[in-house]
Length: 164
Image 1 (cartoon, one colour):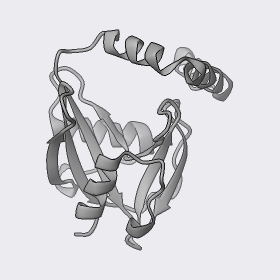
Image 2 (image 1 turned 30 degrees about the horizontal axis):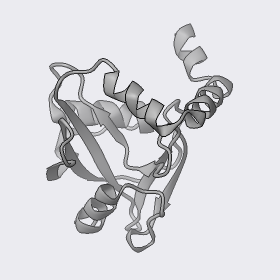
Image 3 (image 1 turned 90 degrees about the vertical axis):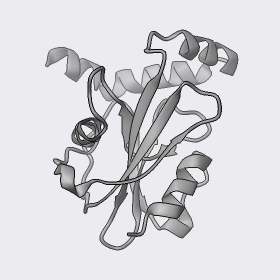
């Protein structure tokens, strides 16, 4: 618990994010390519549709250039996609989601990378998002007014599947 509070310290997070952002892109890519991870990864992401038809996005601290994205993350070893999505939503948004509330919308890969991403949609009114080491801002955007700093794949998936 003490370690968690230290790691979630806003001062530490800002310092690490600032240092990471100052590294040349080549160095960041080198580090990320050699970061220990399984040979094939599975990511889960959630299109959280608000009652007014908007979509909740998070501004991630460690993504340079395209910081806005959907809540989600990588599956843990042995974890199924629905359980991983529920865990990520609890960790990032502090919401408990029933498995039946998750609608699978699409599964896709990203050009030559050793992973796939599974996108779910759910309808929820998220009032407040707890502070988190991974992101520093959240907002609900209209589907036709998504921010510029968003991955194109995520933008396309949201535009195709937010309604429903």
